[in-house]
Image (cartoon, rainbow over all chains, first blue to last red):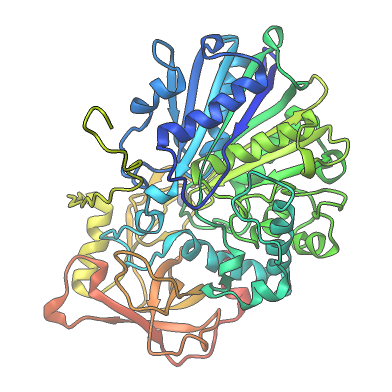
Length: 384
Length: 168
Ligand SMILES: [Zn+2]
C-alpha cells in the first residue's frame, strides 16, 4: 500500500426486521450521517462515495446507486457501486480504501445496505434455470449440504452448531444495534426451533434484517474524529468458480488464498495468537468452525474443538463476533461491511459493552455467493 | 389541515409485483448436455489437460482454462455425496416440502450436481447412498432437466466414504 489508510468514522443503523419509518434512502443516510459525525466531518469534506449492496433482484431496484446519490451527498462527486454478493460490504470497503491508498482521494465515504423487508431474498436466490433442477431453497438450502459434509469430514458433534447459535446471540445482548436480542437463548431453545434445511434449524440461521453500515476512510494527513483511527494493515479479495472438479466446498481455496495474502501484508503468521478478536461472516452457525479452519486459526478438522472449548466466546482467547455477528443481524449487503466496521470499532476502543479489552489488531472477513467471493481486512490501533 | 390534505401518516409499504420472462441461449457445450437430456442420457465433457469430467459442461475447464472437447456419456446411476432436507416454504416453490435436495455424483463424472431424491422417506437418506435417475416418458423428453423426474435409490450398497470424499 502506497498511502496509509485509516478508518476515522463509523455508523450503523439499528437493524430490525422492518424499518418502516425510513425508505432505503433514509436508511443509508442514517448510517452515513452517523459516520460523518464520528469523524467530525460534514458532507462537503467527502471526496467520493463507494456504495455496495447484494443483488438488485432482492428489492427489485435496478442500479439503486443512481437514486441514492443525492441522499449520500454524492452529487457532483465520483460514486461507485460494488457488487460481490454477500461479501459485498467487505469488497465495498476495500474499493473505498484503495481510493485512499492509491493517493487519489483524501476522504472517502463508503456505505452498504439491505432492506430485506422490501425484498424477497428467498425467491431471488431460487430462480429456476433451464440447466438445473428447481430445487434451490435460498441460501440455507445451498449451504446445508456443505455443513453436513463438514460434520462428516471433521467428526464434529451435533451440539457445536447450537453452541455458536447461543454464543453469538448472547454477544448481541451487548450490542444495542443488533437485530436479535434473545435474552433467554439457550441450547434447548435452539434445539427445539424448527428444522428448516436439515441439518440446519431456524435458530442456527441468520435473521432477515433492514440495515445499513457506513465508514469514513481517510489518508494519513486527513485524519480527524472523536476516536483514534483504525489503521488498515492489509486488505485482499479473492474469487473462485462455484463449480469445478476438485473444488473443496467446505474449505474453499479462495478463502485460504485471501487470508494468506492479507496475513502477509499485515505480518501475521499465527492468527489465533496475534489477533485480539475477529468479526467473521457466519450466517449459519456451522460456518464458525468451518471458517476457523479456512482462516488458519487451527489445523484442519479442529475448528469445532476451538468453538467447543470456548476459545471464540466473548471471554475466550480469540473472541469471534463479539457484536453478535451475522447470526444476530443480517442486512445482507451491509453484513460484510459490519464485520469490517466492528473490528475498526474494537481497535479504536469504541465498542462499548462488547468491547474486547485492549484490542489492538483484528481481522474482518466476509464471504458471498456459493462461497466463491472472499474479502478480508486487518486493522490495528498502531500505524502499519 | 389548512391546505386540504389530511395527515394519515406515512405509507409504509406498497406491494408492486413484477415478473420476468427471459430468453436463454445455452451455447455449444450446454446444447450438447440439453440434447443428451432429450435422448434420455447424461452427457458430460472431459478436460484434455486434467482429465476431469464435467456435467453439465460449460465448455471450458475452470481449473485449466481450456476448452473441453471430448464428449462422455455418463451412467444413469450415481452417489449421493451430501444432501439437505428442505422444509421451508417460499414464493414460487416448485416442489412440495419436505423434499430431499441431494448432491449427486454421476458414475463417470468428477463434479456433483443438485438433484431431487424421492421414493424414500426423508429420514432414511444417507451420504453415500446409490441412486438412479427416473426419466419422464420417452414422448415427453425435452432438452431440459425437467426430463429427469427425480432420482431414487437403486438398491446397491452404499458407496464407501473414501470413494466420494474428494467431491465434497
Ligand atoms: Zn482441466
